[in-house]
Every structure is written in C-alpha cells, then in structure tokens.
Length: 275
Ligand SMILES: Nc1nc2c(ncn2[C@@H]2O[C@H](COP(=O)(O)OP(=O)(O)OP(=O)(O)O)[C@@H](O)[C@H]2O)c(=O)[nH]1
Ligand SMILES: [Mg+2]
Image (tube, rainbow, N blue to C red):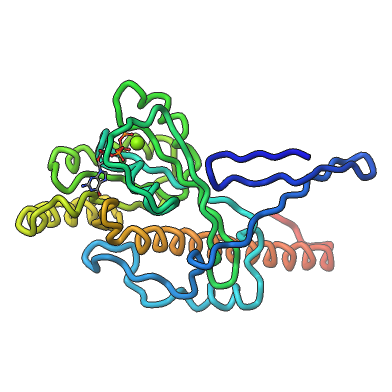
C-alpha cells in the first residue's frame, strides 16, 4: 500500500495492481466536506470591481451539470497561485480557509507551499490546488518557477499598507509572464481588514477598486484574523474557476461534434476537396 499526502489535504493512494501488463493505481478520496458544497453562484464583493455580476451560474453550465455533461472537469485539479509582498498575509489567508486557524506570529514562506481543497459545485466534484508563494525577494525566484499553468491568480496586498497595493502591478506582471492573460481569472485581495480604520479603509478601497478595474481583476477585502469574507472569497474563486472550466469543456465537445459532422460529410462526398 502506498500513501502520498502533499500538503494536508493530499490524495491518498490506497493501492496499486497490475492487470494485463498495465499498472492501475486506485485513489480513495475522502468525501467532499459538507461545508464545501456550492449550489449557487456566490455574490461578488463589490459590483464596481467584479469579474461578473450575475446572480446565478450560466444556464448552459447548470444544464451541463444536471445532465452530467461536464467531461473531465470533475477529475481536474485547478491551479491557483497566491502572490504579493512579504507579510501581507497570504499564508494566513490560506490557513484560515483550509484549516480555520490564525497565527499572529510571522513565519516567512520559503519558496512555495500548497494546499488542496475539494469542492462540489452544482453536484460536480471540483478541486483547487492553492499555491502559497513567498513574498520575500530572496525566495521570489524559486516561487516564480511555480507560477506556470495557473487558472486563477490571487494578488494580495495589506489594507494598512499603500505600498503593498502599489506593488501589485509588478506581481501581476511577473505572474503573467508565465501564464496566458486571456484565460486566467484575476483577484485583487486586501487583507487585515480588522486593522484598518473605516476612514483608512475607504481611502485605500477607492484606489484598490480603480486598480482592480484596470487589471480586470475582482476586488475583495478580507480578514484572516476574524475570518471576515474569507470563506465567501474562496467560494467565489472556486465557482468562477469551475464555471470557466465547464464552459471550456462544452466548447471543446461542441467543436469535436462539428469536426465529426465535417469528417462524415467529406467521407460521404468523396469528390469534396479540403482546402
Ligand atoms: N491583524 C491581522 N494580522 C494578520 C492578518 N493576516 C495576516 N496577519 C499577520 O501578518 C503577518 C504576516 O502574515 P503571513 O500570512 O505570514 O504573510 P505572507 O504574505 O504569507 O508573508 P510571506 O510568506 O513572507 O510572503 C503575521 O504576523 C500575521 O499574523 C489579518 O487578517 N489580520
Ligand atoms: Mg507566507
């Protein structure tokens, strides 16, 4: 029996056997936690800086899920990277959501770390791999080698530190060097809301919303200490990433069907020429 557990929520490989010369590895995944079940599209935080302002999942996505036409989405693990200046609260944000803990002592992330989170969205299993990266300059080059292949990028700043908001442009640029900007979902997240006075918060929020709009990112303000908006935020990330995956899957199966029709037509009409 083999057991591998990357991070705390890792996959348990319960066994492997050989059949007809092929090795088959069986994975036993624990059931999705009851508090990770998403039946409705979670609301955005601020309609002025949102990736979408719909109240519900797109109807073709809902229909595909009902009819179990979501292809490989249920078996995929979507990569999400979390970037931002040192000590803005990236690790605490992830730990609050994944483990429901908060550590007031700062321990710098060295390189990267990751957590797996399993959801069930509209009845379909869906997994996110949350990559926590180091903000410290000396670890940045190790961390940046893990940026590639992200489906969502979470850029974090500290709501009590304007400089950390200004630096988010650079974090975005670095993350996008390794990813396709047209297909990545972006989130701009202000942390430590509990530490920011209402006046300070209003001021920085205006700048953050403007920046999020320019970056085409969705803006959120959270507190890992109190837990405010943390669950709502990650549910939103999971839901929008899931929706994007289902839409891509539907498009793929649609073009496959068109391809089949064209191939059949050419076969039935041998005089047809393909240019
Ligand atoms: N009051 C308050 N403190 C926070 C919050 N989030 C993080 N902190 C504190 O901020 C410090 C840095 O938090 P981390 O999560 O380690 O920061 P990080 O962004 O992961 O830092 P690097 O790993 O170096 O990039 C710690 O002392 C945390 O306790 C929050 O929401 N409220
Ligand atoms: Mg960290």
